[in-house]
Image (cartoon, rainbow, N blue to C red; front, side, top):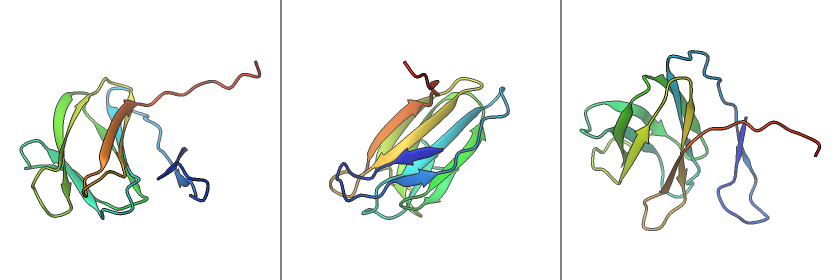
Length: 125
């Protein structure tokens, strides 16, 4: 489960996403979370614009995909448009899980954060 906030204000409700586990340790899991409610839907394509990795990522929604563990350059576009609004370099390892967060930005383009997911053990100390 992933819990995210669109903004750092007290009146903002959290967005709760149900995540899949990466059950194929020969692949990597790539997830995208659109936390930008002001700029519509986005697509993520390969850098040449020929292959859609994720299509129609609506605000407040997430998508996941099991992929080959490679280093790849992706681009972010508005849905249905192939003009790159941002570049997304991703380097993945087998068995790992990665997230792309689309955060509210200025000028219609979201801020993008890319990270490898980690699970921390809860301890009482």
